[in-house]
Length: 473
Image 1 (cartoon, rainbow, N blue to C red):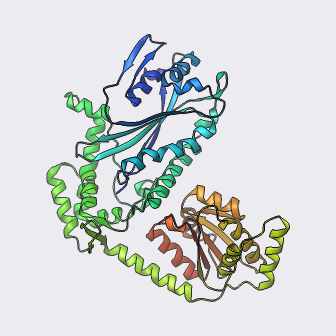
Image 2 (cartoon, rainbow, N blue to C red):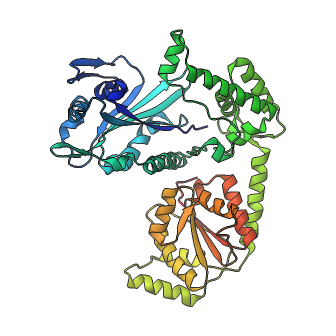
Image 3 (cartoon, one colour):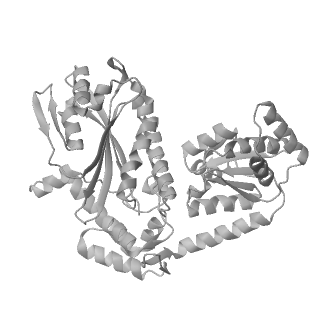
């Protein structure tokens, strides 16, 4: 199962760091540090499979040379305690082929960092862990100053905002899930904490090379000790209730193999004895359901809770599908189409067909189309028709970015599904039989969350419109 990791830190002279040394280590290269008058040579370091400097518009082309770039960063900073760069580190799903994983970060870095004006030094590492499994991840060193043809300008304080880091964490999860879906890989990542996901396990520390080296050198690492304590605590929890493991695994994938279980238990147990005990408990759990062999000949499983969730979802969907309470009169449709044409928007024949389809009486409808085919524009016309017919329209999506895109493209006030569910839990903003709920990127939503939303709509008598892309799950 894919693992989510996204962390950010500042590389600072106050901590004794050098931007040139940091860049040399991450790129496994030899760079000369002009400020310190010495070479930093990490060219023997293995596992770096991609190394590239990305530049924003108007940046000097000479900065494609990593040594020149980070020496210029050092020269621009005069303070002894200067902040030199920001580093972002994130995990790449090991389920991807190496070529796909190597390409995964580049478009994200271009969109989220370089297009904002940052210089970015990308290095993808494809390390192999002690368990023999790949641990692919990326390091991105980012400049902290604005850039122009003459070099660095002032530091951009706006890039330090906490909400921007929150946005990046969510955006990376969405970027990864989008690509996993396009590659037809049945797993996804979640940027939320285990507690927010409803998983009753303690989060464990990420143990980096420094902590591991301390142990091999005979020195104590409090962080590593705590990591093992948490792992054993989690193992004890799973021994007491193996369904915790099955619930956690099916949060990211609906079916799984014995190998998936072993990888999960390995992370959430301490030592061989506890690993064996936890594996035996999970495999003997009455909540484990064997489905048969997959295309690779591996036994595939799911959980009884997942099957029951799917059955509830199917029943609620069938109930909505049978209802015919949300028709929009022809005059409202024609008026909305006419208003769109006055604004210069002329719907294509397929957009008109989709418009008629979503505004029909049926309690649940779906619209599937590739990105850029005009789904949002069509939904904007549908919104006007629904509003004219007296309905209230609500937009929802898994991520905040997708919700923003739905709102900007269609004019439908939108928010994340998690936000909607929170409001419903407080008894606020409840749906009614005069509500239309438009869910964008519906194929990206997990079964449990979709079941809760569909069941709520069915209970309140609302209409649901599911919108998706055939390249998504």
